[in-house]
Image 1: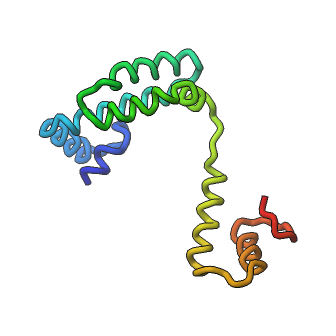
Image 2: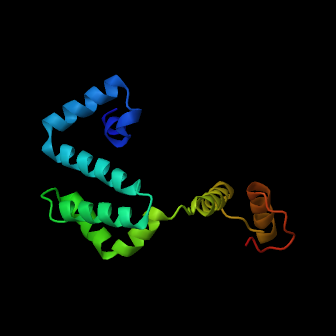
Length: 140
């Protein structure tokens, strides 16, 4: 319950979840720092244009790069190395969700099948699950 209360967006929390989150943050400054960093990065990710994304991301990085909370400082340093790519990702509305879903289905089929001896049947199963109607073995 504590994890759920701290990981969800504040506007989606119930009264009970809000109270759990509030008490956790009062008891432990480490958790409070992590929670504030998470909420701040959510604000950064809501940027709609390049200038806004740059300003918000720079503010976040400046605030957390040398923060006493170790995990936040490590995340900020990793983002600083890829700052331009991060800004472009924030503004872009493209997603690799469909590809990730397809890869997940393929891995699930492989796991369920415990290894196919016949590759033709494996590819047939993939086409059946993924919805491809190709007659050749190439999925892409």
